[in-house]
Length: 311
Image (tube, rainbow, N blue to C red; front, side, top):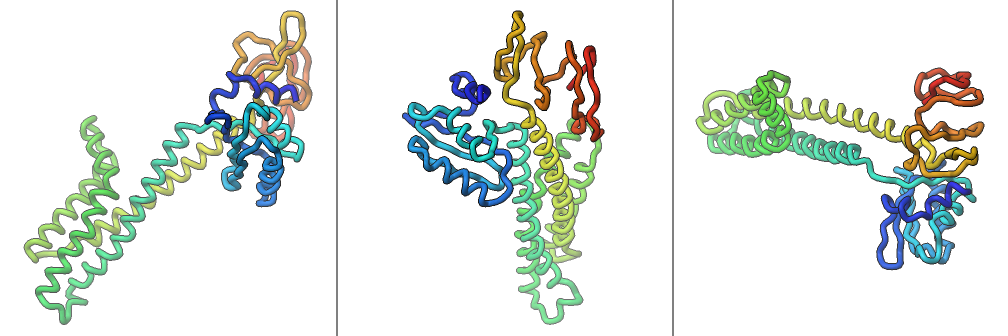
C-alpha cells in the first residue's frame, strides 16, 4: 500500500486531478472489469463513502470518473477501497495522438454517411433520366431531375471528398503523383461533365458514378483508419502495464518507493520476484526468469542474470 500513498503527493496528482472548490475530480482506469455488475459494485462501494460526491463507471472504456472532497478523503484511501474489492485503478490521462485519431475517424464517418445517403438519392434521380426508365417522363421533369441530381452530388464532392482534393493539392505542390491526384481528377472530371449535362441537357449524367466512386473509396479509407485506431489503442494499453512506481536503491542499500516518472538514468532499482520491470536497464546482481512474451512472442520465461540487458 506504500505505492498508493505516493498518489497523495500534490506533484503526482497535478497531471490528472482537477480541483473545483472543495471538490477534487479525476478519471481512473480500472483493471479487471468483466461485466455490468463490476461497474455497479464499484459505484455502490464508492458512493457509500461520505466524502465521495459522484462515482460514475464507463463500462465500454473501463474509466471511472470520481468526484470527492479532498480535505476529507485522500486519493490513496479511495484507491484502497477499490483494491479491497479486487480492482486495481490507475490515473487515466488522455493520449493526444489517440484523441486526434479518434476525432479524425469521427469526421471520416460523417463524410462517409453523407456520401452514402446522398448517393442513393442522386442515383435514383439519375436513373430516372435513363432511356430505359424514361418512358413517360416529361421534358420539364427531366430537367428537374438533372438539377436535383446535381444538388445532391455537390455535398458529396465538396464535403465528403474534401480529403482527396486536399491531399492532391498537397502532393502537386511537392511535385508528387499519388492516388489522391488520380482520384481527384476522376471525381472532378465526372462532376464537371455532369454539370455540363445538367445545364445543356445533352450527354450522360455521371453523378451516380461520382457518388458510388466516392462511397467505396471513403469506406475503404474509414476501415483503414479504424484498423490504425485499434492498433494505437492496443499500443497504448501496453503503457498501462508499466507499474506506477518502483523501488530505488540508495547508496546505503536501502530501498525507497518513488513514482516511475522520478526514475533517472544510472539509478539502481530493486525488482522483487513477480514484479514488472519498470524500465530498460542491465542486471547488476541476481538472476531470475523473465516473461518477455509481449516483446518477443516467446511464451516461456527467459533466464537472465547479472550483465544481461532487460526491457
